Image 1: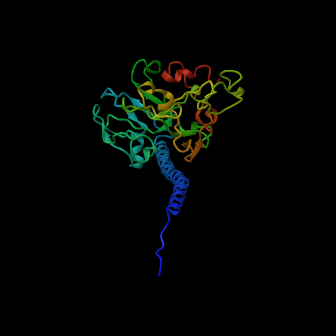
Image 2: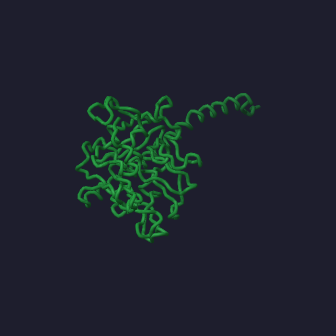
Image 3: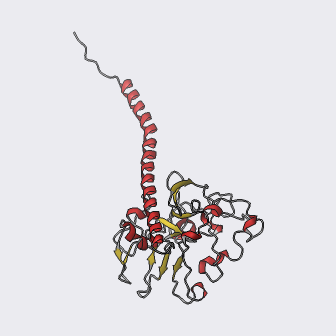
Length: 305
């Protein structure tokens, strides 16, 4: 007589245990692969966005677009950001009608303007900003409220830089994945902050003398640093951090502590947390910054220091 074979309880438990062990090993691998795929998409988006910036400059006497200008609350001076200016060159991204000025704008919320793992905001609502990718404010200047008499000392905007003014195009960051402000206030910065004090402490033995720079880097993520901030690699998701430079306008390292950067020569790469160098990658000597340059006034007269 043939006996029917069957698994014993012990055998079933062993098989279940093996499956659980394999799952515990493989799931993180799958998660890493998924994140790597999303990073590749963001790198592609950054490449397209930076090419749009470069194409814009080629049609504008080599000058890059401003990060932003105008005023959100005035139809006479509508708020325009670099994504709106670049959109005609790439025709990929969000489009909406400004409810105040009535013009068509792009607010960095879709297409090639986004970091694909950044917080999402309503694409079709023009009162919500996106901007999970931001431009270097020293190259693409921030002239928000630039028409006001108090701005820049005499209501004169600070011009964006020309590509011919960039001393080391392969080293100077043009754009980067960045933090986003909370959706509570609906606004965010379209640029990455450029102040030395947002990245590193003293770097020159003689303040203001670039020839005495002796170190470089980004130590703002390090708790032992004098410029450390707990918001450095976060999105502003709570009321207490709304609008803080460290989260809303700083490079954001969403890919296993890596961020994506585009450079003024057109190439794109990723850098790990702490690998970015402020002096080498962010700072661009301008020579036209002064205490009348609104937020740029913090440079004068002691940076780099």
